[in-house]
Length: 186
Image (cartoon, rainbow, N blue to C red):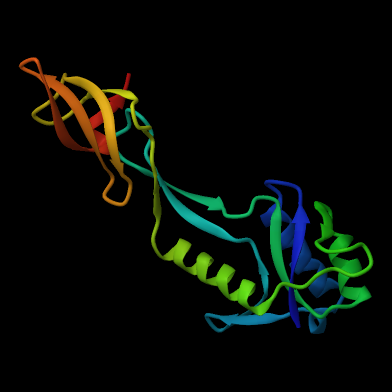
């Protein structure tokens, strides 16, 4: 069995996956598709690559967790290459085609599959912060000892969820290190 990339309509990836899994069972074609055992339950290898993002909204005190598609408009399916399996996948509503030529879809290389699966695993293990500010953006400090001061974003440290801001104190530009929660865009 090989992995193939299936092009879908954007924002329809999970719906396509669910319909494909139901159709495989309904048509009794499970032998053409790869399975994995997860928590005493077998599931088909129909993968929607996603990662978890910690989103900081401007002016909000707590971050939101969000699941984001890594490859919008694409899912990965493990299946036996053949006309029957390709026709089944292409018949699903929301699927445009299996990547490759019209007559011969192209399977993913083993290294590509391993890299994508590792990327998915690392994306779900730790959430990646989304940076709500840009370098040079004017901000206002909303918390802490520098509350009320205004300045500009000098540096951004997304892993630590902190930014370096240049504020003017006593007529001198002074760098201060602040948390994403302590500032608000002007």
